[in-house]
Length: 421
Ligand SMILES: [Fe+2]
Image 1 (cartoon, rainbow, N blue to C red):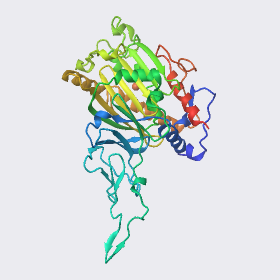
Image 2 (cartoon, rainbow, N blue to C red; image 1 turned 60 degrees about the horizontal axis):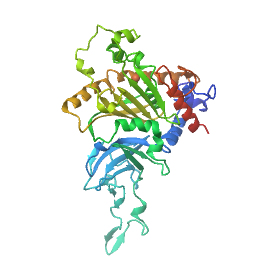
Image 3 (cartoon, rainbow, N blue to C red; image 1 turned 90 degrees about the vertical axis):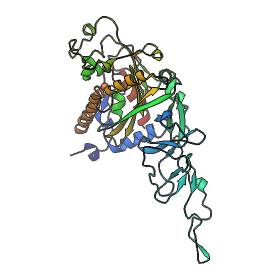
Image 4 (cartoon, protein in one colour; image 1 turned 120 degrees about the vertical axis):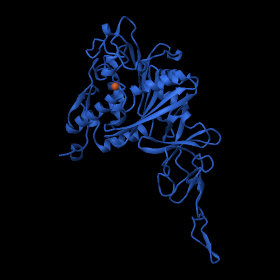
């Protein structure tokens, strides 16, 4: 038996009405994954597509995804932002292959039969639409009642706030602000407070694990001081960090807010054996932290916007991390490191240096990719077992400490509500 989920019907059994014990089958099985895509990525949820700063000029575009559907975020001649599906109305081809580019003058042309679309996705050119005149008669062409207006690209709803762009296939979706809810919106606006963003660079990695594990990783304050020995060894993680965990009303989004402890020496308060007071970084500039006025207290806020994105502020390193599923057992994880237009050159260098902690080979984040892969392997080999997420009890609620898995329980409370028929 290589894969139990292909042999047995994929009926998930939960041990109770709660979510502190999560069945391994929540992470395995292609049918359920398709249901998740429908329920979370293709309706009722705003999905991250990018930053306005990635497409500053008319005609600039970025190819990305919503769930597993390829889309293009493009700025039109009037400066508006459009998101269209990367599927030609003619023969269904994913016509755009470049990640970034500019189509100000040409619009988008499918290479197969050169159907051409405007920057808003309107069909504007169909070769041989009126046929070919030959020997005094017209051969072929599209039917007389063919209307280009009926064959544009699929246009998604678009919402932008603070320079961050979200899109949805759902025409009836609530506002982005209602989607986030007031608590999470407050932390979103703290980071994206209207300053113009600048793009510093990208990391991309493919992680062989279920996409939800990435959400869970950033809803899990239990692991950083234990898994990430680099954090601990050099005193960046301390047990006297002041922390809060907050969720939206549905418990799908979350913020982990922490303020670095300042009392005494790190060595007296870490309570974790991997801290080494005598160990020093060869290049201390990796941890050369400069408080910024907009922080307003917290030194790190990690936000999960369900289902598609993580918004990171870890001291001076700020980034978005886009979750792009491909199948139930794999996702691409795309990091966009950014800064702010009013940053000094020195601050930009600091953000870039600190970005070394993150990304696929980051001093800290490399660990997360690996544990996600190994978790998925465990799930696949033992389909009727379940994980435990009982640290801090079995209930769900905001806390003023980090010794809890409440955010993971909260996410699965929402997941069960949306997924169980
Ligand atoms: Fe981590």
